[in-house]
Length: 491
Image 1 (spheres, rainbow, N blue to C red):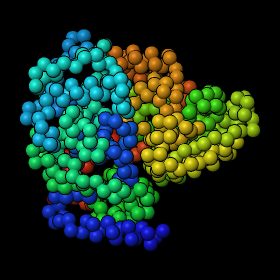
Image 2 (cartoon, one colour):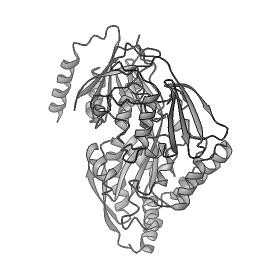
Image 3 (cartoon, helix red, strand yellow):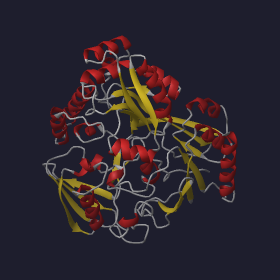
């Protein structure tokens, strides 16, 4: 294995040896997961947005690194008194990477496509309240909602809501054409993907001329590549045990920020025995969060007891509802009719939090009588069979979408939680704009899913990034999955 890693790194060094880095106009960024495709409007994989968000594609609004929502392709907007009509005024002079003009027709096409009956958009619910999209003139578009939605501008900042063009939509998955500060150049699948500076960008031009994304899934290979300076940045470094070495090395800087990544042990709520709340509660009490955070993440991660980010001001600490208590877990299993335990599947995608955490969780469950048969899956397989196919008993995944507690109002979502009262609460929340009332409803929503033990809530994923010294402009926190290079400089 060591020989294979060495050869792979030597080959990668040869590939990039000819690149000129003297003036630092180029950057090599590594990630653990390779995107299955490059269409953020048709895929659920976090890795897609990690490459294309802001770099290639842009929306009407966008997230900044501090989580704020600011104008994007819409320079301003007017909202009707009843909150149901948004009139967006678009930036002038915006062109897609193929030279075609971005205008209100493209906004209408993008929003109508996302909300269409046959839409494959992973976050189709973001657009469900739209009843009409009208082109007023080339730089003005009016969006009408069925009812007021206090999150609408926030929703339009998601990667799933970027603006695309009908002329280039056919090949968007492999040849993405957006309006961003970088253009797609080439993709050698399994190795690297290259972006180049967009010379005709409508906004502040990127300082970098070229950005190469490499995909290094193995933590040992990631450490070796960074130490050898074969890469300049590793976003979401997969071996937290190595971070002290980088911190002590003047060649590097280590950034540890927050994410919106609620890491959960998801349970299939419609599959026996997880259709029994007592069983789900037993699973939750069998889990020792501290052991998982210490053992899998080397202390990086904040315990959570519900599907909400702890840094959000509306967060409620509900970890006490699912405190580690293996004896209570056994008692609940017996009450549910499983005194002798049961066997189920635990399907794990590639990230180290899942693979490492899965081994620890399987051992903890085994201690109360639950046999979790581990199946390691590649990302594409997990998306197809576990996420879409719902063929699993349990799985571990980090939900990195911002403020996504609304997924619990979707009965056909992969963990298949169906609670009409919760669904009604989400509808009311969506139609509410008063901040105090929204805050109270967010807290109520957190409590409902925690008390229903929909899933076992583990920790909020931290985002450790290792970078060469001197690089500035990298996001510290991840309010959405993104490796935004538009403001990165390296003097």
